[in-house]
Length: 223
Image 1 (spheres, rainbow, N blue to C red):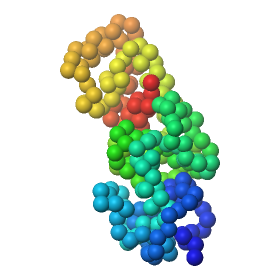
Image 2 (cartoon, rainbow, N blue to C red):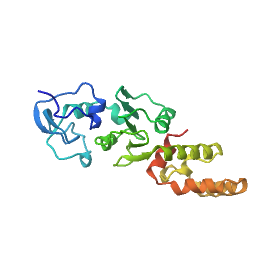
Image 3 (tube, rainbow, N blue to C red):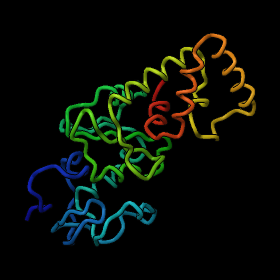
Image 4 (cartoon, rainbow, N blue to C red):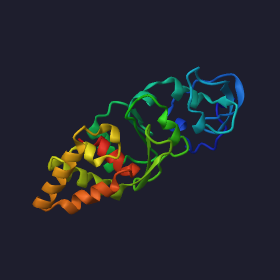
C-alpha cells in the first residue's frame, strides 16, 4: 500500500522535503503532520523528544516525518527547501537572500540560532505557496513567522543603513542577553550621534520594531 493517503498535492513540510520516507508497520494518523498512513511508527521518535506541544492528535509518526526527525540537519542547521531539494549549506548572506528573493513555491525557510530545538515543526502545515507572503520557521518562537517580502526588503535596507553607521547589532535586537555591560552608555551615545548626524528618525524606526519577530529574524541574518 501507499505510505500516505493524500491527493498528491503537497500540503505538509515533510512531503516537500523527504524523497525517501522511512516506513514502519503501524497504521494511524501521524501526530506530527496529521496525515493518515498505513506504515507509521508507534511511539515517540526518541527518548529525548520533547516537542509535544507542536504535535497534533494521532498515535503514530508517518515515514516522511520520521525521516525528518531522524535527520539532525533539519534541527541543527538553517535551510531552504524547494521541489529541487533541501540546501543545508547556507551562509548568513544566503539566508538573507532567500528572504529578500524567495524561491519559486512551494518552498520552506528555516532559520536556527541555537541548533537544539525542532523549531521546523511549526512549518509542518505552513508550506509557503507565494513569493510575496510566506512563512519563516525559527527555533526562537513556537509559531511560524509570517513574512511580507515588501516588509522584509524594507527592514533589510534599514538594518544595512544602520549597521553601516556602526550601530551595534545588539541595539537593534530585543534580546537582553546580547547586551554588553555598558549598553546604556553606548545606547545614549548612539542616540546623540544619530541626532547630530541627522539619522535619529531612522534609528527610532528600528527601535520601535524591536520585538517584532520578522524584524528580529532580519537583524539576526544580516551581516
